[in-house]
Length: 291
Image (cartoon, rainbow, N blue to C red; front, side):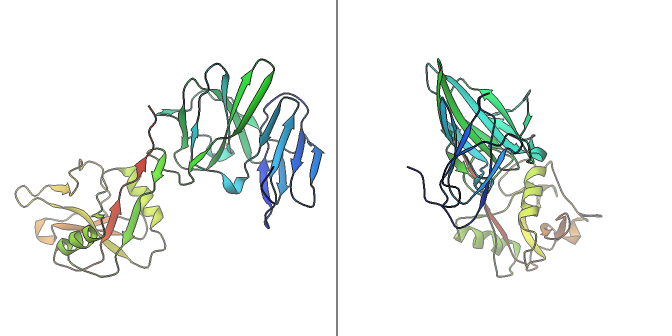
């Protein structure tokens, strides 16, 4: 039994799994039934389910429109466990298996497409994730002359440079302009925090996510220490990676709190903490970890 056809046509890249002639089973009404695989083009356009059939394997394909960024892959004892990863040619970097970057991959072009695939054996249950893009992951199990497999379960379709996202981060600019101290309380009322941006990668991600917002600037969770004059983050993370705008910050008299521009490269500027602007509230991403 296969799911019913949908109204929209989707693209299904076909990864090379077994070096054997294959057939394609489609469920949409235009091409229902088995058809011969055209080796000159490794993609099928269909509004329904697409299944690749080899004499020893039946595999449901993942359309590009349903690619994900994080997958769980189950290890089965006593069988050869193989991953098949399909990704756009521009995003072959950034793939991780567990905590380790994918290295030494032998990529194979899918003819007639912009996609490449690679295979990788695994020895334990793990997660497969991409730091910045979406992909398809299949799990294939082999024993003797028989094989079976399926698309790996998708945990998240939202790529994140830090890992496999279970709960996406929350980034919210409140509507009311207020002082820096009031902004802290307003974020907390929504179970969020005035954002602390302690890494360059997080700065870039937040800046990209906020492009097109109607606000021009927002408070962020850093200020000068009243004792030492040194800048610090509200969440106590290290204040090493900064994104100050040109000629910023000024001296103490120019401001003890900071705003982030929501234009250009989202540079920071010091401001008087009593000035009013909109707060940028944040809740961190929760990640899936499999030991």
